[in-house]
Image (cartoon, rainbow, N blue to C red; front, top):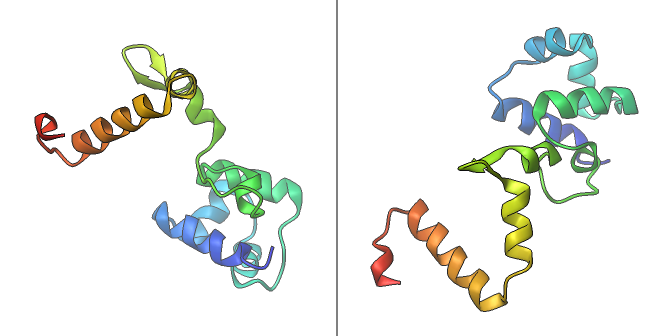
Length: 119
């Protein structure tokens, strides 16, 4: 929990929000938001839950128990053509390592707009 203040600040700034905006969104006082971010106070569990929803992360991430800032709700979102991210992960988890490596290369190439014929 040592890093929670820095993390809260980072997430707020990443969302482009001010402390006052977070305060209004969450109904948590501006002074409390400031105290959490500076490390002067630690948020209670209900506050952590509220902040995790605003920032789109899990409470585990806020507590440093998970390295991923991706909310589990992403798994139900559509990836493409009616297939969810969760379904894509399931498909990938059941493929052979060589196939996964190939898929990763395709994704990275598409992201970087590289010519996939040169893979």
